[in-house]
Image (cartoon, rainbow, N blue to C red; front, side, top):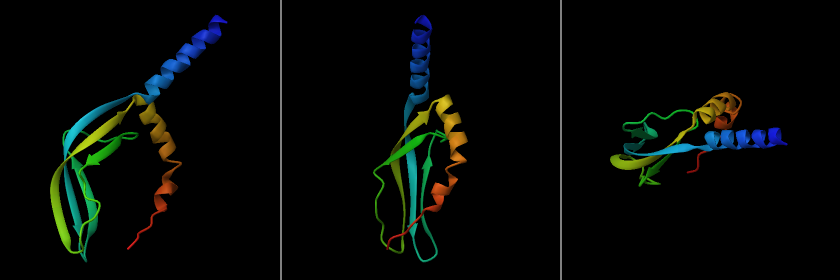
Length: 108
């Protein structure tokens, strides 16, 4: 019975370690362009590197820009850094999920 309790505690600790994330608020620069030659949206985060398993939310980013418009703006971003086991898990699983990136569509 003590072995079962010990395994349960160890499993709970590993789960917490796997799910634990650190939150960082950073400044960001948003670069948008919708011209005949370019269609892009880039975000540059200042002071933090994004790795496997990390999540980023950019605050205040526009959802639409007009055709033939270029815009660069300052914003804030929240970065949730993944734990070490989560990062390793995402690195391994990312290789099997690469085909999900092929499912891209554009609406006009």
